[in-house]
Length: 297
Image (tube, rainbow, N blue to C red; front, side):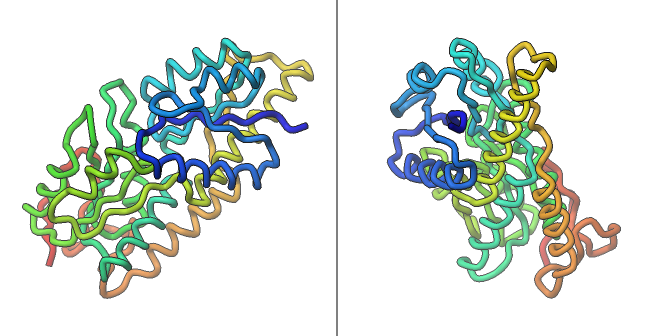
């Protein structure tokens, strides 16, 4: 029988959040053939310790887009109590950026045209490295877009999304989109929907096919690592699976998407992503909010 797979999620009091995570769990179940269960850290039951108590030795995949306290401290602590393997989270992965890109394109179509600047809005963390996932998404998304891309945070860090949108509008951009670097609906997505003067706000990404593929890769890598350990290879201290690099298929998709984003530049995309800077080229991504002096035409 396949090894149990537990998705460790933060949890939310918003009913729609559970529905999105359930769709993700269904997709991962189909991809892996594994028994998939969701364990919550807060707000919803079943709670993660209760789920793991019934599934000792399971593979735990943290459904977290940053490496803050939950990912680095409390999930590993709970998992150790039940001899479970904990994979890396989803922070900084190409699959996440490609999901963001897809969501952005859908939101732009609904709004009536492309954005001329993008704010990537993450949850936010005060823990060192906790915002690296959002910053990495900014860097990667900028390779796919011919417009400025900056970061913002819904809590714990600055700038806040409304501040980032106002900053860009103050520099002349009029179609500022917010790319929601969040997995499921909740109080943060509701706050993003209320940010004034946005051109478009994207949907969260938990139920995107690329996220399901990434989770399935994490699970497969952990299972392979466990088989290697049982065959005699040294085990790591915390049995954390080394699943940090994207699968080959995902690397190919990332390369193809980057190429397509550059080659499709036209009237609405004045320069190829990654092309040498020229007088009318868009500013480079600045994760900290300094997008340069270029203003929208």
